[in-house]
Image 1 (cartoon, rainbow, N blue to C red):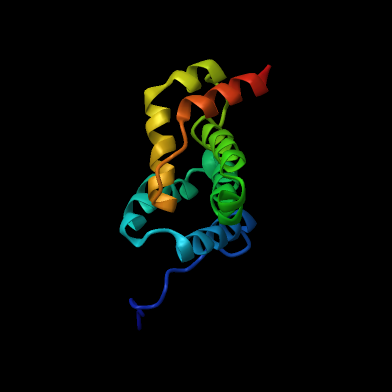
Image 2: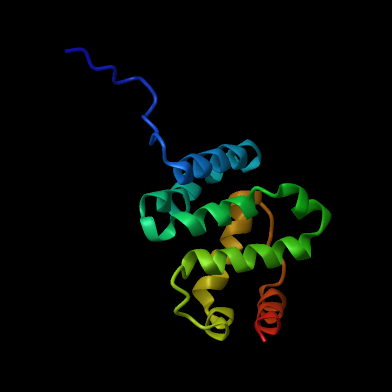
Length: 137
């Protein structure tokens, strides 16, 4: 029996969500800073294995991959990122928008998205959270 240990890992066949996530990861890795590759893998890409997070991960990665929107309209992009990140970390929508807007852990995660994916400082979290609360009403 011959085992080829150096071939690339097998991807899931016939799984459109897994294929979409993989394509988005490749698109993001073209522009994202290399020094944060392990953090992206550990804190975001790793969620592709958990069924509850797969759909929201796909949407989140799609929003992150819109680098053109970040350049053209950073405020709109920050708002989209806030919403998709909130949906990603709370896929069952158990937390209220008020709690999420005041949560220091979520604020940290929002800042980390900008650092890990764009190597930029994030826009003022309070403004984005306030917009999110107004949009919910």
